Image (cartoon, rainbow, N blue to C red; front, side, top):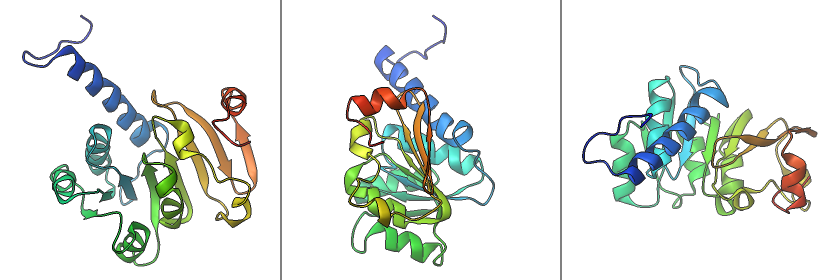
Length: 193
């Protein structure tokens, strides 16, 4: 065994924790260097990776706004250290983020939900903010389609992160930047290029 597993922890739980922990660490420290005073929004903040991401962001100095679907999940995110905990609706979470940030918007939004939250995640960002789609299903967090291409805010960096924490695609303003896997993903219909 390369990594000692505490007694009472199954191999499955240990493996899942490692994957979720590495993903959260990558999102907090490698993909973007979290700065003291950053405002970060974490969707699905009470999931396995979400709870770890909240803790790592707080430890790195970010103010975290956790978005969760139920009061129980909101309680878990609060216990993990989120300074603000909100629901998805009533009012919509992007309006709540704007209110909390006094209209500025968040520095970064980690969206692991996908299509149903993509637009609100964009509206939650400050100018030149970062939206990270970190869904295990890349297609569920696809970039804006051609009908909305001209409606997206300028100077927003879009990054799709796969389940192993590798960034595969980014867009900044009107400029597209490709990484080695982008052509393969586009051929499979997972990304619009």
